Length: 549
Image (cartoon, rainbow, N blue to C red; front, side, top):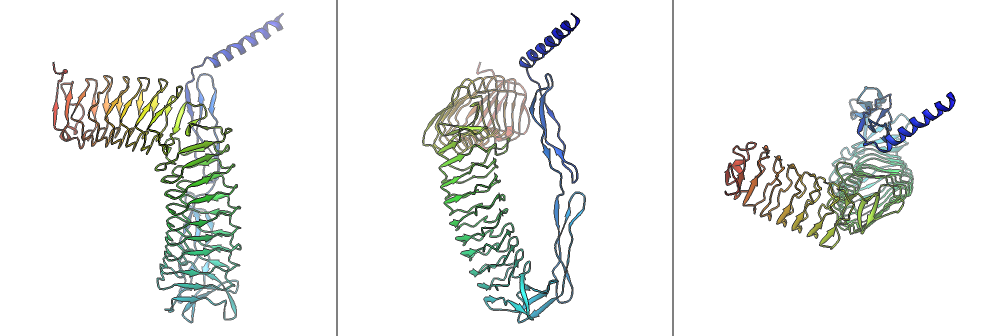
């Protein structure tokens, strides 16, 4: 009998636990993480309920590791030896790469050479040569010439052509950087490494071929080569680093090799002439600002396997009409700054049905559960948009740059409108926000230059900074009675606004809240001026206003 009672008691406790968990009004608490160190792994922040213990966000391991910084070397001369660049950890000072001695320089026939430990020679500078065409010999003193040193021909603006020997194996960093008149350079088969910024600012270079012998290229390799039109990359590179093609405004033809698995941030920034880019299947991440300013880019297919799209990845891709998001993508932008399509004109988002975080609804991008409008397809020609019932949140920048939209109809289910949601909606004329919305984010209607009237929700307590900045057509606005604060530059440059009534509950008005509203008369129900500094920006302030009675 005692055993039966014990079992009944345990089952009763289990039932109570289940009921309490199901009925729990979760109190979410951050589980603090810790930073990784050079030798110990860290943890990301987690999240759990303090009442029932349910975990909402598991903590993830942040791998440990050193943070390398370059220890600058020095160039060898005919009088003194030099040092190669080294590396050390910026946190613990551990030496990660030792500096090596660079032997004395030898000068012959104008070019300067340096003998290497392996009994080969490196070309270290132009020396006394004045010719526009530079021919690097394959041997010097019966030994092979295998390297072009760091900075060897940097800023040699008289050079128009360089002929490299078949013996060449290495091109150092910034080797031809700033050779503004360089039109032709051959990279022979056999070269395995090309250093960072090797051809940066070679503005006259129109085409180049990187042979398949090359297995590694440095960052910013062709940065600001504004005349570069065609590039053939080695099939054996696995990464294209930061800024590699940044500022190559004439680049039309580039194929990313199938073996590439990593792209650096800002890799194709302002490649204004590129119309199509095919990403290989090994790519896992679209990095920050990867295709920023590629204003001729018509299409890009993100392959299955990509897990993330970082902020700014497609900003100002003004010709990009559609975007396909595969099933594998689990993160898009940063949670607090969703701007990876700022300045773009996407007509339709297409999402794989098995994607776990987002879906497409009539071309717009929504969270998987349909409760958050993430991004409106602002290339649409529609002038009216109805947000579906059930949506509770409009995400950061959701309607950013939606220049055709004139009217937005909100559902009664909506509770929040986040930051810069309607920035640059220059055709938006009238807005009525339901009373269910409790907060209106910072910069919400900035530069909505056609906005004439707006109904604010009754329970709104604060007008955030720059909410109506630049709304030059806004002629009238009624503030809700529960408003307590108006922040910095909230109504800046609302030049059509002639009068506004400040409810009695308002306790503070930020500096320059009405900057540029030179014809505005402010009627304060309070007998005292809330805040300080702002009255100088308006025509008149009337205190103790009681509605004209």
